[in-house]
Image 1: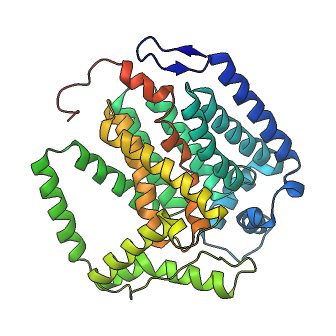
Image 2: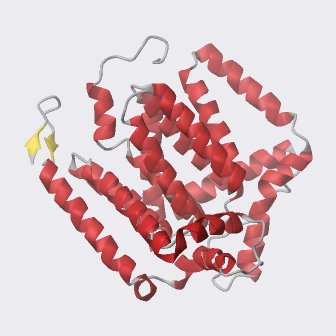
Length: 352
């Protein structure tokens, strides 16, 4: 270790961190080669649905599984494995190799583990979301604002059009949060009022469309899934009014972000640690980011959190989907965030 002359805080040596990253990558390759023997069956659920479509099945025809299956089918079996391993390698290397302090390394390992476990041992829809995050962070390192704005729109709108339509909501939530953080206090008041008015004017069918998927998923987990879901829950209020929407959303905020209050146990403590680190880092960057495109990445992460709480029925699903955006959270701890502190002042009008 050595000390940073600017902060007088101990930092990890570059070669030490890269050695840790290299060992982590080698460990990932070893487990990937024998994933069927090492990993539990539920990790392969989505991959099996996608594979059934590639094999000519019609059970999920017209769904997001079918759309992703067509992409992986073009790659072939060997190509798919190479793509997944390549994404996993890039993700692990980026998460670890740029850490400069022991605390940031420990935090990134917490954020890294569920993402690799759920998304990077199989070819799934979330594997592509991890790739999207890698692309966005790579572009953001160039410190140019407009390319990251354009890339965010292109990636999320494209993914929404082809795979998961709700990614359009993530994009909307990200830009709304960005505008809110960049506005003056008067602007924030007006934006808040406008958002509440717009939400209140929605027809009851929209509230139902946004929240009912949670009830459907919880019913499936309870009665149709061979794996079940110990932490699944339904909307406590009928999702057909503004009051019901707000009550259900606030309840989901508590259930998903404070799991130890409802289902205390070792798994819930681990999930709580992941959520706590992700939310703390995300909010810190959103509030204190020196460059607009750094803040935008934090806002995209906020969009993932905000939209996931609309429909996620249990802690496992919430963690799996949120972990696909881990790199957007973890970027705040690495030298990516340190670059912003060493950079010149941002142009007037961007920072508040």
